[in-house]
Amino acid sequence: MKKSRTKGQKSGYNAYQILHKSIQYCNNYRVLIVCSAILCLVGVAVSVSVPILTSQIILRITDGLMQQVILTALVVLLLNLFENSMRLVRTLLFHKLQYGTLFGLQQALVRETLKMEVSEIDKNGTGKIIERLTSDADKISSIFADYAFWLIYLISNIGVVFAVLVLSREMFILSIIIATACFWVSDIRIKNMNKVRKTLKVSRDERSSMAIEIVRGIRDIKTLNAGDAIARNVGKKIRESADYEDKIRKIGRRFQMIEYSTYNISEFVFLAAGCALCSNNMLTIPAFIIAYNYLNRIRDLFYGVARIAESNKEISLSGNRIFEIVEDHTYRKEHFGTMKIDRLEGDILFKHVSFSYSKKPIIKDLNMHIAPNEKVAIVGKSGSGKTTIMNLITRIYDIDSGDILIDGISTRDLDRNSLRNNISVVTQQPYIFNYSVKDNLLLAKPSAKMSEIREACRLAHIDDYIMSLPKKYNTILGEGGVILSGGQKQRLAIARALLMKTKIILFDEATSALDNKTQSEIQDAINELKGGYTLIIVAHRLSTIIDSDKIFVIEEGRLIDSGTHYELLRDCSLYRSLYNKDAKK
Ligand SMILES: Nc1ncnc2c1ncn2[C@@H]1O[C@H](COP(=O)(O)OP(=O)(O)OP(=O)(O)O)[C@@H](O)[C@H]1O
Ligand SMILES: [Mg+2]
Image (cartoon, rainbow, N blue to C red; front, side, top):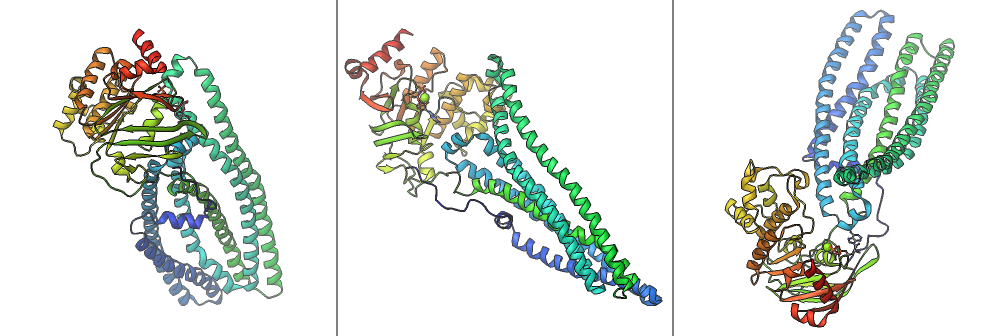
């Protein structure tokens, strides 16, 4: 039954929550954080003392205390050398944390994507998922680096603030006011940019979906000669994304002017205030020169804070998109029961099952019983819901109401392995992975020995062909099994299913892409399974299923009749017409 999304669940995390959640994906993150924090404290201590000592040097030069000046300078040199090596170690630790986090997060992202309900991918499109798996994860990676840089920079410069405070309280307050003004201007820019960034990401998702369609549909695009039309559509999307990127750059340019002007004005105000303080004897000239020299570093410090704020916004944007997948509140995940069964008997019962795709009813109050070791067939016109029924058994899609029981247990109560490891499926369009033949087969049964693999392939009449390939079972099959013909893909998929030797085997038009000879050979292979397995076969070629123990006739998602071939020929007009049409082919 469809699980409704938890209402009111938090949909947006702030950057710190994202960082906190992300960091937990890094192994030993606690040790790394504690070590970094200790080194940061060391950094702060050095960064506080060096500028204060440096200003003391300048002040003492004017007092003529040369011995003390040399001694202090040496201490400053040693502290700086020490801080340099500490910075190196801090950077190393940050990098370890960064890559550990990313590695863990990306792995979780892939794992959780695989748990997502297929209907979510149908609804949202592949682009959204791909962008999260790739560009959002990369974004987090680059922001992490930026973040670490600015954090280390801030720590290394914190001492400057204290140095100015020691020199003059007035100059300190003025520096803080100026730096706050600069930060405020940067912050407005960031907020403006961020609004556009959100829309840009949605547009990129759609652009990715289109790119995937081009690659997937390249053969049809060529044969339809639809390249120009497709290029126009994709062009529109590319332009849309480019326009948003341009908008972001425009905001950057506009604010650059304002930011530079704020810098210039602040410098003028600082100089004027310093001169006024000096002329009133509230500040010595050397102290004023030192404070003026530090103004830029204090501004940079606030600029660093602004950059961190900007990184925060980006982290929260990309991070939330990632956690929408990693967590279970935006995209529905598959939920399985806890009942474990090693080996099923193979009894399947549909009880008043109804199902709809996006609220469009497809399967309507379906009742069917398939006994263990029966060979049954499901027939019906194209679009009547046969493949959907197969998908409901394996819970690729979840039913709306009713129940599907296997060996008397609701499929909702079975755990994933009990359900999916006990049913093998040969689909209408089997997907062959860009692995070797052997690795494609090992996906079905990782522990299979070579002798078992070859036996399954012999049964599926594909072994001879594989042995004729240059690298035999080690031949790489290309994306989607591109080097195989439609029939060869189907036979390999059949071998994959036969290798699993599950009690329940579902064949969905499994022999549609085969020539008559190969088809009858495969029929023989299927017939060899008869009696020992529960077989459900969906076939358009009714001649291939006339020996079934039972045939279910489906029309617009309803079961309209069932029986043996001869009973249905006699009693069911739809079956008769389907059979006669097929016989004429
Ligand atoms: N993922 C989906 N999202 C929305 N509608 C779908 C989806 N898959 C199938 N449908 C619709 O559900 C109905 C049943 O489809 P199904 O694939 O089960 O038919 P079928 O009987 O297997 O047809 P065929 O014999 O052509 O393979 C069709 O009207 C189809 O358009
Ligand atoms: Mg189908």
